[in-house]
Length: 164
Image (cartoon, rainbow, N blue to C red; front, side, top):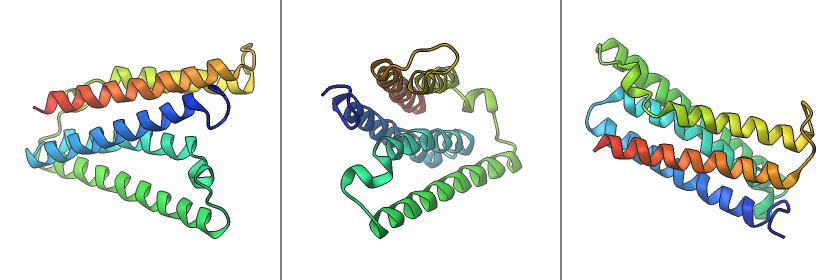
């Protein structure tokens, strides 16, 4: 079914997460090459959101038929990657600040789309759990999550285009 768990919409969500993650990392690499460490750090940090989103939509490997120790190792691996990427983005920010090349306003370019993506995810969770007067509705939950991930794709394209 289109809306069922691990259905068509969730597959599109995973694809959107993988695309935006890849574009954020590519943008970070381009900016690092241009010695724009602040932009690289923020792009790398932004990439963590679709990375976690893809992991969540894939139930951190359970959807891929991983069970027992395979699933456990997958969760450990994803956690290590997450910590390494977060650490690298923080190191880049510190280095940029020490070199007096930290320009927050420019580095956070496009952050409005990130805010709307996060709000979409929060609203999706309200539809999933039926909170704050929202009815439980799986269709609206999945569509709001898809909107959030598509906003991240747009943001990653926007930031990559801005690197040129």
